[in-house]
Length: 280
View 1 (cartoon, rainbow, N blue to C red):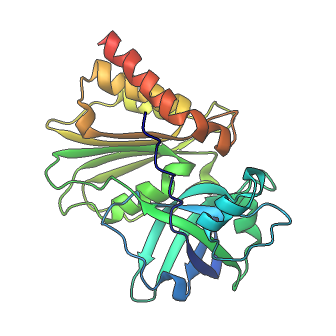
View 2 (cartoon, rainbow, N blue to C red):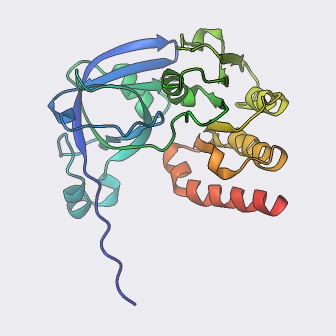
């Protein structure tokens, strides 16, 4: 058997913090800029994402990280840890990229970093990736997500085709976490305040109880993997929507950190699809 070629480390890019803004009590916007973004471009998706790279404590390499050299010269436990975040906006003229972070005190890795970030801080990232944007050919749009999906939903609303019809459901902890969104005529945004309920319970109910408008729908459902699975099952089995009309992804999973979730995410998604196909 031929040996597999060595895995190529993705090219890393460097940027620096230009400014930060507290959008809501638990959402911080970090604007990145600098010469490292001179060649940065987006492909027109509204769910563009980057992977921020965080060096372990005591690492002796500097931004921007040389990922190929690090993987060759350092043991795995000294490799940077990555966290995936949506590009909220990109201003090519100013060369500024905004990234929104959900922050819950010292919980996690990227959230606390964003809360402490100050102008001049250096950061290394990989990307961008992406794959969804509202299509003008759709008769109407359905978007649903928790606060982790809010940056992508907001970006999608700003690029909705003229005259588009959309039903949008966003679940957040409480009214203080609502954001002012650009909502063209024909777009209805419903804020769902979770309170002490399980994440996604209100979103699942809102989607399953929705009276669908006539015509072909394009769907975007992202957020915690548990409720994403339930909504996906409903859309595929009960609404009989084809996969081609769906952009559905579990950004995170309750009870697992980002590293543990990414390790099993692909297999989990494939298993969900097999289960739902067999039940169809």
